[in-house]
Length: 290
Image (tube, rainbow, N blue to C red; front, side, top):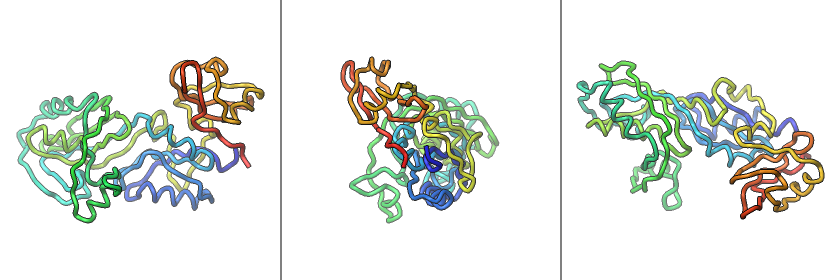
């Protein structure tokens, strides 16, 4: 690994887009080869994973990891963006709603659910991103998408004011602002999300995150620490580095993968996945450092 190959766990500050963080990281690290996994809204803070150098090839494996969030649900108000940044579009008297009712409504959104992406999301419709259409004042029909909410807890911060803390563990692609709005609607009114913070992506948590100006790089193999890994000898390593399809028994792996394949010196050679019965193939081969 060179000094400019690895994974940076960033604690994104409010007011920055994910692209802003990438642009800043490029200046801080002195390289153009920086990408991110899993977009965070500008108002949101917390964990944003950046791939640097050859680690940009690994971002596709980081995006699907489970996400954990904390935020606040504000009942009684709907906004155009479903969060605090948007214009108020409706208000409701929800003063009679109890914490027990909020918890009950929230429980209906745990598990496999269908969720409609908000108009301010980056989903493409007809070749354009929804937020681009929204900026032009256009609203289009969006197909609901399957997502999974593993855990959703709500607790009153100020029940009289209709403010509740939300803690969510969910699959990639889940919109927390939509969850907040849907809970409000399920209670007979409306709601929006504020103070969203991503606490973790997979095993990468805020406790190890750094501001972008102080970015630190984790070594390439650590970028895939949430996946199983195998270490092989130099002879097999040459076959892996040339991108050969192998027997699963050659790597001593079972299941679907993916697996991080490490060389004799613990360097990351490739990421393999299941290909056909008894066979595995490289999803990504990591080129040798320059």
